[in-house]
Length: 230
Image (tube, rainbow, N blue to C red; front, side):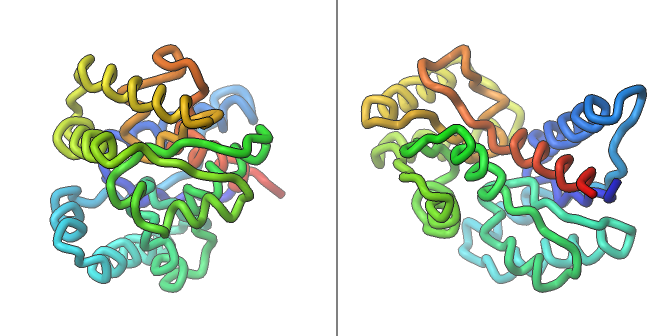
């Protein structure tokens, strides 16, 4: 079993999902009381949040690359950035380390492709929905990605930063997300990617008419598959 290195705290609310799912899947695969060999480097979220809102992505890349180097030095044999937004600096972490860095969009894209879907919606932070770094990576898997209209994108973004990363789960926000997802379904989306790892804390398939693709869970499951391969 490879040792999994998690660059977490982005936010810690969703890093908990990674740790839980990784250990659950290892136990399911290996049986008994097995759990994963894993390491977590959890950053102070306010530090990186301030940087991204100031557009200082170079410093974000340096900070997360340093986290990756530290995890590798401690024995990590593979790395994950536990975030969709911060996957914007995935390449920087790869260049700084000598172990595989599993990209969250590839885990999601593989799932969409495996289900044979041709058009999916995407919810996430404004960075993830509007900038090309994530959508282009998904599109490389051979399907179309659609995002909500501008006003809905702003709502989704605001709820993430004002509520979800702080552990606040409001029924009114869940209802607003459900309406946004219904709008994407009306535009032909066969499923919707929860492209912010905290969103799956708020909403699930039982709240919507089309399937949801929880990025944190898919990323964690892909990590287990890679860790146990070979």
